Length: 193
Image (cartoon, rainbow, N blue to C red):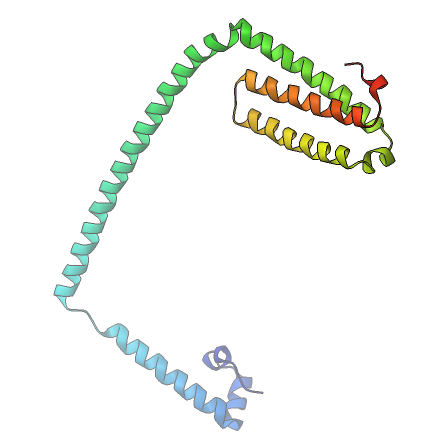
């Protein structure tokens, strides 16, 4: 078994014994020694003064560039922060006035709440149907896909913050779909909503 480069660089009594018996490791140790000496000689050489001056000028130019970039970034951040602060103040003072005192909007929101409750009740009636009744009817399954699509549309409407009228229309359509599903299953007597 041969010595690793680390073992060759940090000689111990055991590695010295191995070197005396192994020509391959001995040759590698000699190469490593020569490389180290070459590297030590490189460290002793000095760059010309003109090169050092060029390096200093470049470092100074980079430092100045970094300072200018930093100042520009701070100014941009300050502008954005100021704009955000002004926008927040405007929103605080003007946004609630239009929203909280709008009786039409409040009426629509109450109607949406009522429709949501009706949808929940109809959904419970669907759940109460036997599984066999639901699975054997193709029309029922197609309407079920329509309800899932409508649910996605309702979720998008809330995420996109659409008007209450649009949300109300979507809830009404969902209610009609569920009622049609119940009618398909001849559960007309259960529909009370």
